[in-house]
Length: 384
Image 1 (cartoon, helix red, strand yellow):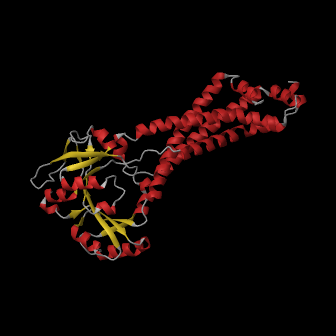
Image 2: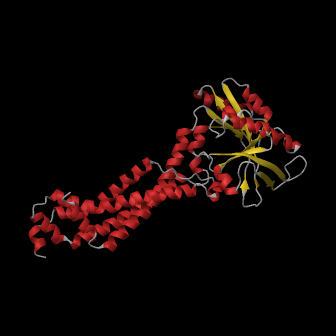
Image 3: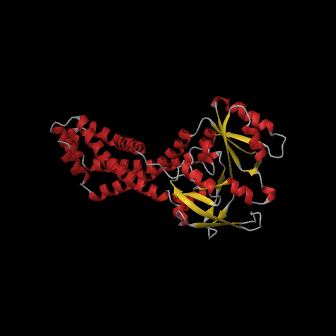
């Protein structure tokens, strides 16, 4: 505690400089927290990806068929298979983009990470025109359970030639982090019976669970080879591979966030180093007096490091708090849903990383001034 009055006096020797350093640290660590939080989100996607699930899609951006689904369902080692299809439309205004995901009964087992309970799956199956929305999509569209949700498409897609699909909201569920574009869960059987006859029986994507994850390479080769010469060649992607490349779908998320983090840390490192160097130069005589009074070289260095660390650590704490508040707002932004960018995850682990980097920045910024004070010649300093 004997050092505290000295550190406190040094920090408030020039209050404006200390406050500006603290605010710069807050800004830098707010950016750092958001960037590391986004990386943590995408790392979480990979950690939660299923080792036993693959996705079967059309190789050339087309569709698959129910006949292909049935052939795959009969293959050895397939535990469950689910069907998903979709179209792109909008609710009331073209700016309110909506992408209903039409799912069949097989998705109950093939996609257990869907945020629907058994009762909600039953509701969806019993009410063909019903949909479930995630809470972010519901907030973006201003909808709640019981509301009607007419969705307009850009081209006639119904069997009767109409562009308008009439849905109603059965309920609102919690948004899972992987649903970056939001969720509108609808009934595939209803969609297949209602769309144009020439599109009936088509499938956008298949979710396949295997009994043995080690069989994925052989299963991939077998499925792709089975349909290589068909009108709908297939492409198989393991869940973990898809999660691994999720951050590079539109642009390289990890690279972008690492660049932002590095820029923020460089900014605060430069500022702290300059501030501490200037502060120490102004107080060479004071440090000489302290060494005369018996303060050790290590004690003097500790004072310099503490003067650098306090604004950095407090800035990291405040920046994390601001980043956490911003993350809750960012999660509901419709623009992010359209870009399919996941919101940041601000956990205690991210805070620990922020504190660690704040300490490293303080250590690096104060290293040279502290070393100079350690080697300070008392007699020469007192003659100044």
